[in-house]
Length: 504
Image 1: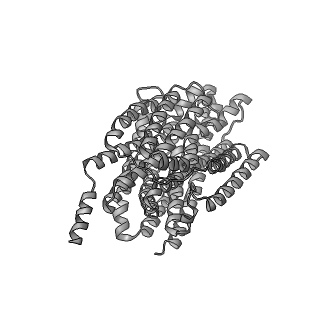
Image 2: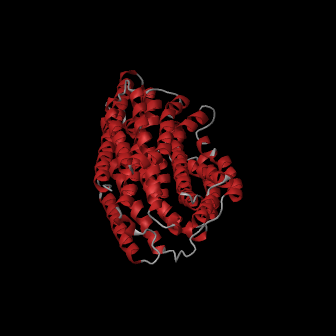
Image 3: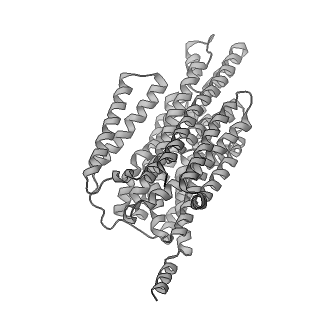
């Protein structure tokens, strides 16, 4: 009889139509957030022509969204645990739509950066809520694993779908349409979520420590600023001071979490090798894919003259491969172990980085797409595995905060990928453009971005213009090679770490 009762309880807890419909709504939300991290990549040439940002402003426009997301995910995950995860999902969705409208109709780089900041704040309310709601909605282990796989596939697919959908829109509409398209998607989420998503929260959350909130933000922002400014302008007293402030704030934040009754991050979880490897692997995998994707749209459109639609569609195989890898990761982990699958996924990213050295200014488009596919497969598999490992390590009442740790690693990986790899590539580009024979003003513009260099070369014409264009293309590709070397080394080190720590 006890066995029969247990079976009945399991059957009663199995997900039905409403739960799978809820997964669809939650997946739509995470698709929106992850897509917006990359959709601007394909629009960079168009946006550059319209708003004329500097190289530093361009990096901020592309990166500040993920940067703010990473800084606030832990905080918003804890807030959602307290006030209700569905509630914060709906509030964040409305704010996200409003910020998207402002971004779509921005008339200056500063206005666009500000809108992207608000998007990041709103997006930080969505990401941890989706995974935590999946944790509370799917109580059967196998169904939860499948749901996490779907969530991961959609998150990975959204990141790569950004350039594809952006390319389709930019063929027919203005550059801001890549943001305006968020509004009808948010409307669908706001209408459907109350009907199918069941509210959940931590029944005994404790007090939210506002000092820890401030310290977590203070640890992230100065560090990213220091990285960007050092790459763009070289070391300085200001960037050094910013880095020092970020490191000190991070140390104080971690120490504070150890004695709080209700910490933002349970640092004791990092004593578990599986949890630590999951978080770090997530960060490194996304670091590699986002950093190289930042260059992709510019390489295809500016260096090789592809239309936005063709460039977006060229990245579609990487999107499909990433989604398939995310869905396949859970069954592969059951068969071969998480350690094996994680090491293989990271190894694919290392191989992709090596293959990237075959990409050239006068050819190698096919190789570039192979690289994106290899790195996308690795990132897709990693996201599923790390999300499952993190959720399995915590009780259900801390699911939102634990999910936020994973997603913080995800968004921090994206922010650092664009900041570090983008800045490294930009520094190489600055040094490689031949501006001899140009007046001071055009020479400065040509060194800013590859798009600006093409415009200067077109305006100057003749032998000087041809020389500027050729050197800019070569310098841009050299920057990609250096960025690939950095990302490949990071993935290799992470694979070795996973191999050592995940022995059981």
